[in-house]
Image 1 (cartoon, one colour):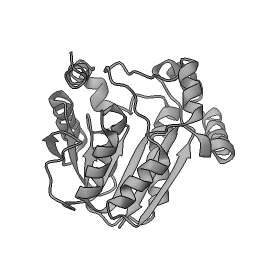
Image 2: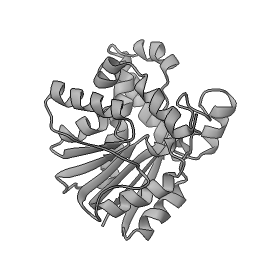
Image 3: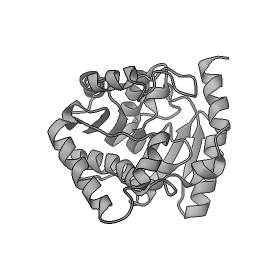
Length: 248
């Protein structure tokens, strides 16, 4: 089975209820880590002026809900029809409006600068041509660009060697982690002048959830948050989680 067809089949097989509700049912520290990715990206970006956004590889709508809760009207583009169906159900259940488009992230069916913002969260690394999709994001966004993806990093190579990170995901795709310098260069070549990037150490997998559950109650949770931030001050610049943001 070809990679794209295998991915479509994989995402169709996911538990609908879990996908619609995530991350609400995740342990509190994992929810914090997910929110911290967006908080960190928004901090790098500064003031946001967009009132609408394209969520590339938007899946079941978690990122779209993030944006809707901040007053930004989302459009989700995804290859999986089942994921888009789940996103529609999430929007109805949790009271936000969303536009759904099925399409190829590397060939977006939109005109230049037709969205205020373009955002992707853990979507490009599924693709055969992630930088081509990044070029497309830069083309269709008018004001802001936010990319949150796995970083190409020595720390990640070590994690793969130790079996803590995947080289090939269950969906069948090779994990194509992004290089910060190359990502910035591609965005700048698309006409974006103010481009910034940062890396952080962020780690959660299904097998870690029982560990994180032990850190949910107070006072363990505030200690976890403090430890996370101190670790990232010390070694985050070499971390596995890349944020690239830009404004015109």
